[in-house]
Image (tube, rainbow, N blue to C red; front, side):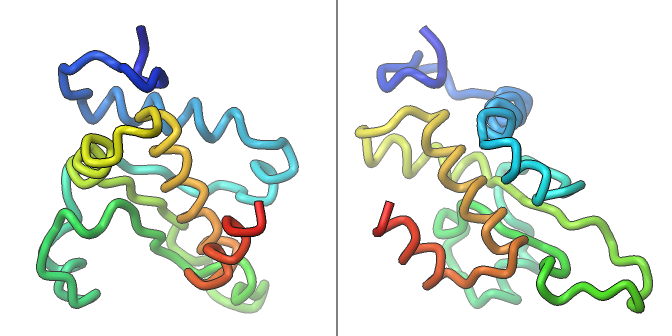
Length: 137
């Protein structure tokens, strides 16, 4: 049994387990999608930093499962200085909490969902755009 099974083992996966699941999810995406994402960097942390939570006005760290940080592709210009690498953060503890509460998806599916959502921001999509696409799918 693996973390991609809906009835996965009860032992909490490590940060490395999460990173492996994120890599599997990214590798399973269509090739054009992966190519357009470019050199986005993935990082897994237990929670968002206090600074990030404060900047977003979030009091409960379990409310944030992922975050895109960088200049989205639609706002980049060759005339701009070289930007910092775009990063997608996945927050292990909030994702685990949501996974346990839901019980209707595998951990791998939930990680893939959060990953794709944050890559959507890398493409310049808003939360409303992403939710509309998800509803239409």
